[in-house]
Length: 195
Image (cartoon, rainbow, N blue to C red; front, side, top):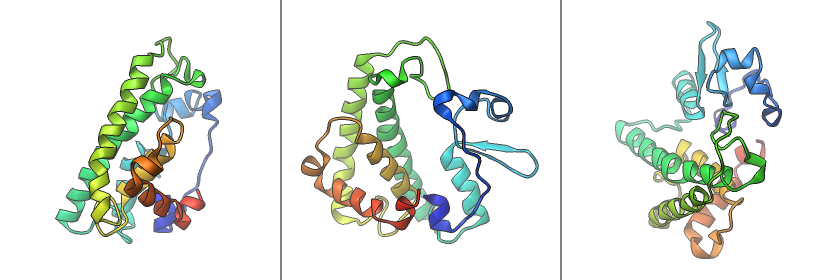
């Protein structure tokens, strides 16, 4: 979505993560975290983590500014993006990985382990996510986008967080109408439709 918004074209290599291709050579040697995406630069430097890759690309291709232009915009966008990651995306991720049979043996991203799934962690993840929803709902009452008037990386993070939330049983449309409307606006962007 970030690449599409910025009109950046990269050579992409698709990996079959369900079959653990990211744990095989040469990919495991390139990215020991075992997660995707990661970006290989011409000098063989590897940058992993989606937001880190996006920050790097923003410096190379600043416009449109998705991390903000002024110091204030950058700080607010970063603040909201971090809250969405830590208080929403991560708890949802742990909730789903601790409840879905599909993630047995894979409760931690980038690993295959014998760590057991914990139903209490799944429940706590939903509770934490709802705390975040109650915090962002008022923000979206008076702002078109999560960090204010302009679309940003925080909206991209939030959109995928809300996409992920569809795997759990929450009535977002009726319980959090501001969030539902915002998510709907983001999903209607061409960049979301072309992912």
